[in-house]
Image 1 (cartoon, rainbow, N blue to C red):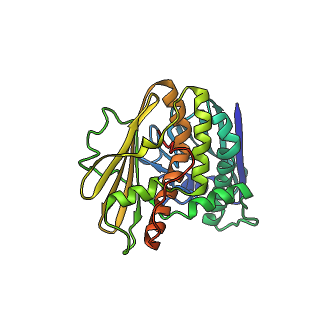
Image 2 (image 1 turned 120 degrees about the horizontal axis):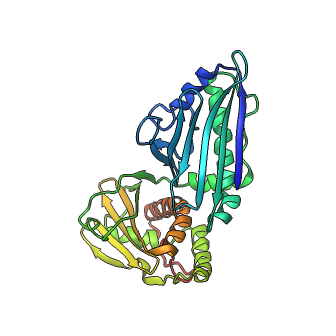
Image 3 (image 1 turned 90 degrees about the vertical axis):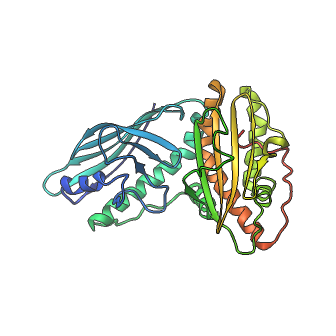
Length: 326
């Protein structure tokens, strides 16, 4: 069992602090720290409200206005448990704001939690408590500082210019898989001097990736055989279909099927991914990959934009074959 608690005593009445908590996940959120993947909910804070932040999904399972809101993790993430925001009065004009996480990790998350997820979790919660103090105009006296690991992860994310967008409804994506279990899309501004051909963008995205991504893919190739997942070959990102403004790539495998669309629109390029998960190995695999997927895809897309803007030709990567996400 993992228990992780962050709390801060605040010189403000509980009712005022609860107003900050109550704004979570909606426009004008006053508590979630800027600069992190935003927390979004499909409705105002209350029973059944569902959403998440980054690659983590959860829903409100307990709600006591003025005192507590508890979220339960969605299944299939390798995280089984809850996290809650609690406002506890501590005398006249004072209270404690606490975040209490209790969960069990499973599968690959047993390794990912201590190595990457927990450091990022700790950083965002301390930034959140700083945000609460700023909103109350009470501090913070000593703003939280990120660890070297968090700074490295953040720096990698900040280098990208790609942003999340709705998955476009295109002719090539429509009905491309019998069932879609996961889907997302990211867009990057297209430089004026970049090619209009979507195939040139697809080659730039998938045939030459940032060094850290190539290392991650090579590690994937080395490890997947231990859990019975076949290694990907260089055909994983071959073009399946194309139109004048879109290229469709992808492959089918025993653990999951995926398709990637590269769509060239006026002023931008959109990279979409849709996935169909197959069986227990597929759920285990995607439970790990889904946490890395946004950072990897955004970095690949942004690197392609920089490369095409500079006029540098796309080169094939030489790490033994692409292996992401299929």
